[in-house]
Image (cartoon, rainbow, N blue to C red; front, top):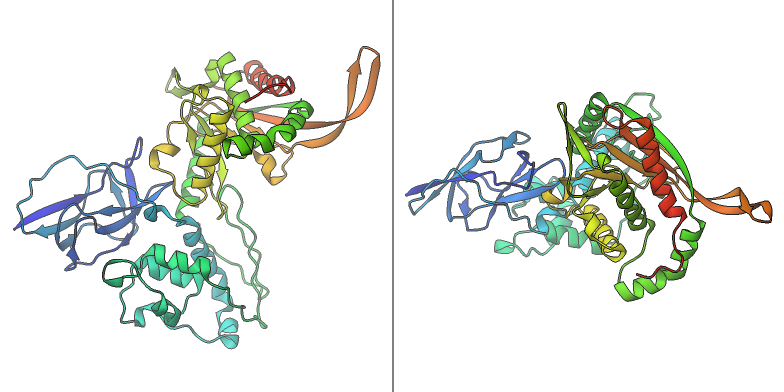
Length: 449
């Protein structure tokens, strides 16, 4: 007999730890090769840790919500063969199923549990009590139980869902597929109490309106929200933030995109949004001001050779993630459009790999998507700058011509550049934003892709 030490694998560049979010096997369970033993979560990506051997789960080394370092032994599996231990943890294989929309479900669960607590009696008065999933004789993993509870799936309904896992076990993929095809049942009205929850902000700071009972609500922040809060606080405490604002006339650019967007999608199979165009302008400006493509370590400025653009992306649960386009300066407009669409789409369904949210050298955030005219974004550490792009608006403007000035309607945008004043002075910070604006204003309407 031998013992296999299941260790936390390497999960990508700069990822050194993860939180144990669910045990998928119990002590004494039979383990097959590639069976998922635990689910873990980093600050951006969720995944499971599979077994490389057959055997029986002998020992658990960590409890739920404990932080595990890469290389730590998570569990011990007893096998019938002798195992040669190694100090090197294997690379993790993140399957598509392992990263299905996990964060929104977690957020929904916490908000629902906290908000409904003060009005539980009123709810019970108008709706029957749901049976507990634990009452079933059928096995359900902790993750499946969590999804069922969050989505209000009764025990009877859960038992009717066919499973595609081993021994007809119900998997996460099965229950999510069921939810997609499920006809939403009408909700029972709450007549004695009412709870309202405001949409969470992009930074993940969940807010709630007070219930009509007059009692305050205490809502526990999700793990991702806590990490974002810590990251933002650390950035404000580290960098000396200062902003420069520049207005750009993007009328010619707007008209060009309207002219070519259908042709672009037909030829490339991709939508042409403004984000890749903005990123191309930022790349152009970073080549003029390479100091902005740097980080500060102690008293040393590390100027980066590669231009890796992070693009802030809002998730459905109100949290924020920043996937990174590596070597963005090597891509043309078509390549940038494909990268932007791919990363943003996979970010919203939690299908990003750990390496895809690491290594950024400069960040852009398109706050105009939410109707914001401008803003003062917080620098994504350890970078030195971030550019926020406001909404494009029709504005009256003075137009200068050789025959005199006149007032006309133009499409304009405000660029807000936050930068670290420890390294970047006001002149350079303003000139960088102006370089981006000049690139957008002087867009060649005859350009092809």
